[in-house]
Image 1 (cartoon, one colour):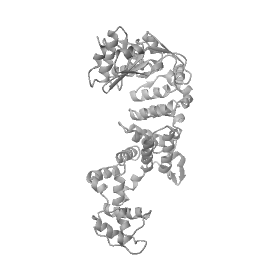
Image 2 (tube, helix red, strand yellow):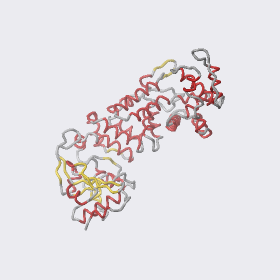
Image 3 (tube, one colour):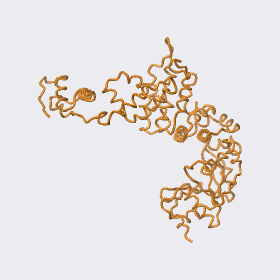
Image 4 (cartoon, one colour):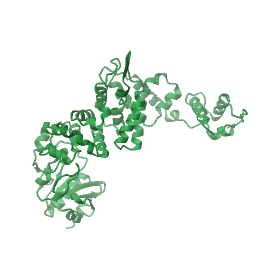
Length: 456
């Protein structure tokens, strides 16, 4: 029988693909189980994001069995099987020998006993095996009980697990936050003892865990757990510095900068990454700008915070585009207080800035976590509904070429002239190229003093 034909269904889901892989393996006499996060999520009634299969078949046997398969972790016995858009990792049972760098085992040994494979994994809730043919659960480490009790618990000696791979400390926080679980006391105690080892983990791996903590649900709880576990000052000392920084009670009855930020994080629901990061960092400039002069002041904190956000995200290896977007959000979050006094042209430019939906949502969360006044938010929402795109950013009436024809020399003044024309256009004072040219002649004299007539 050609078992590759089992995989011939186009568009099969990862769930179906994983079950088909297990069926094909067991039909050849191998043991095969769904394993890890997919089993955890299925038992919790959640939709798994990906599926993994564990088997006693060796990598070369898996490769021979499935035509659309390739080895992605030769040393660790991992094969990636794909079909259409679906992909599943198939890993041979193994045991790991001593870890030499806080991430990788010095060597691995392939096994035939699934129990030995389970004992090398990180947390009990991620170490359950599911036979997809029978529905039988294999639980060698008490993972089912910890699921029922909503606990994240390291397998065996927690300190040993975290010394093997230091990132597991952050993963414990992430699982507890996104699942709404607690971290088992012995596991939390081990994290607190070893927290400084997180500094040995690459910035990219820390970044990826932080992204998931902020965007996969319960971001507030995730940041609180980072603080409780002592990891926060290690990876985000600028955020930890918010604790105890007082704010003017008139505008911030909720308390200090830390509490304000936690309340905003609690308001996040399926946020973009840039919005989540800007909520976390929007007031990061307050601790270094704090002073008391008649009242509490944070002069320039938005500008300082934008610079700090850029430094933090650069340190964590975020992309240039992500950094620029977050920097703009942090730098601009105080501009909303001026919308009542903006002239029409300034307001339209404000509304048309890139990714304004994130700016507006950041403002809404900022208000709800402080004074609660959403008047400006609703004012701007109404403006956006009223104004079509062509009014926010209409086609230019004239260009630099027109100014050259009028006798102006190219250079920095062009920007001033064209902005003045756009101001008048956005405010409804001019509507045609001829009116724009007349406005230029009335406001700006060419260097030679002889404006040239241009008609359009």
